[in-house]
Image (cartoon, rainbow, N blue to C red; front, side):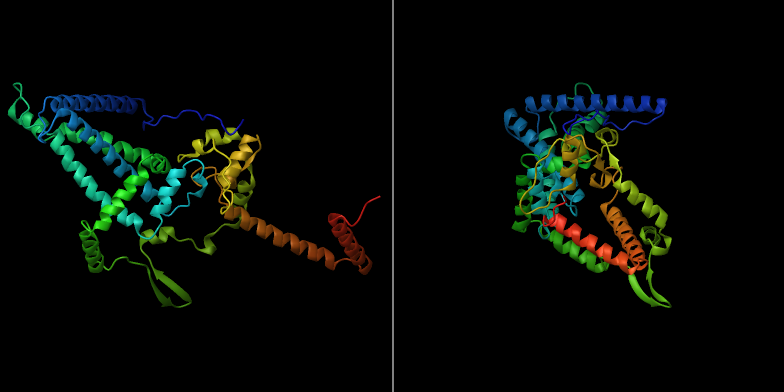
Length: 380
């Protein structure tokens, strides 16, 4: 099987396992879809008949509403994507998501992530107010509807809120959670990022830095575990959560470490990868090969792609960390170091048991092997 295989389609809708629960879940999806589509048609009708609070022609309102939804979707999706990849190396995505790698490079400079969040929030509020003026219809005819129901469904702008929530906020957030690099690679992501950074640079929302600094000062943030001298060594004052994150050398199982290293050196076929593909871009990344810039080492992902392309088995330590079949390469490397030390020890032990003549023969054999490798010795 080549690296350009098409993975089996997976259901993206979360679905419970029980039959009764599945029925209720399907009903919920259908009802939500019908309600949201009804809100969309209501908004299109209200804007088209000039019932919007914001004055202007319906054509202008349609354009503004599409712009608001698009910009808001970028802002929401980029927030999830940038925070998900803030401290991660994305170099293995080069060649697949080049624009996304460029966006990540900008975010990695200084405090650009925090600056993006500050500028982004300004535009989120702006989009929210503009969308409310486009989707609230105070002069919409009630048509005999009870006053309380008219206020609840029309005057409050509920249809607009549901539409913006579905298409401008939740949808891009869920997509970004599934594949952050896809969102960062979208055309326009770089410009939206720059727009937010420029807004922060103007100083208009800079009060956020002052308020957050005061709050952190008042709460003594960030807090770190306190080190104290204790009998027999250094102990930490840790919370219950911290204790769950700690691992002591005495608690490690050498047998389990060795077994994991053996598994890390095991190989997988392309069929194994299809059946256990990772959730973040793995199936798409397997389709791409050939990136090797001068200033970067070739990435493990691209080596795995080339192996799959040539129908060769793939070591598990080459898989992306998101793949559940991945074995960390440091486990494999450490086990190989241990085995190398053991092998050297065994060789030295054998050498110590050699007779003087055997040692001479061994040294002559080593010299002959070196000369043979260098081409200075020809075997008749």
